[in-house]
Length: 331
Image (cartoon, rainbow, N blue to C red; front, side, top):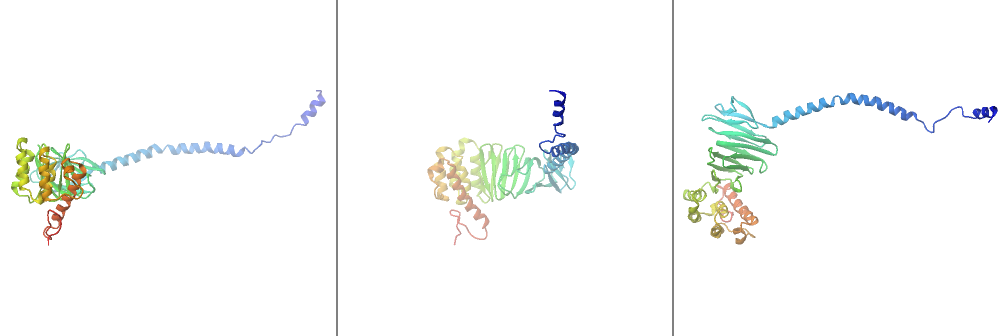
């Protein structure tokens, strides 16, 4: 190619080169991203501070939920080593102690209250929305709770009282000897695998070995003595104590026989069942064989009937006379 041809080729080149598309929006976006990133960096600077503030707030709120209000009703109860003048807060792990002239009232979260009588020592063990738990080392408390079952618990040296929506008095010494008296609803007292159900208007002796057999408030003294002998005296005397209980039992004592059925030696179960069936006939579907075999469905069915009759007797006492065998009003 000579000089003239080269010059002609250069002259034929375009004066400018246009891109196939507009690139400026992308460039502007990138510039904006860089500026925005610096703005977000400034904003992210405050995130750790905000998170710390939220954490502090949650810790404070949790601490408040982990403490229950306490009011002095008489004297000067102790929370730890501090005297309670009028009111205070009982925190998880704290002990509340009353002397022979002081009483205190504990607000159990938002579900109830516990009055701590003189000469008592109580600890707050758990204070959560899903579990409210006290420990009674010794002394007497009056609890009143309005909540779903198995939300409030009181530990004692002999076992745990499990609230089923109720009111009750619980007393114990430091070794575990005590008494449970239910004045509303029902309480279950459990020691290991052994448990007793104590309904409204019933009592139960407690020993270091665990719960005894519940009996109704108006149970005759000889019947109560026979129950205590069965529960806590030497095992060799239990057969005789069982026969005494059955001989003295009334229809109103079906609560006791229902528990006894599950605690006697196997050869005596049939005898206990037969006496219970005479006093309070089993409901439809509950058979002798299934009950003696301690099948849960049969036991629960029988308990439901016994509990319903007992409840009607207690609620309608002084108003109508209820047949303790059937739960029906007498003419």
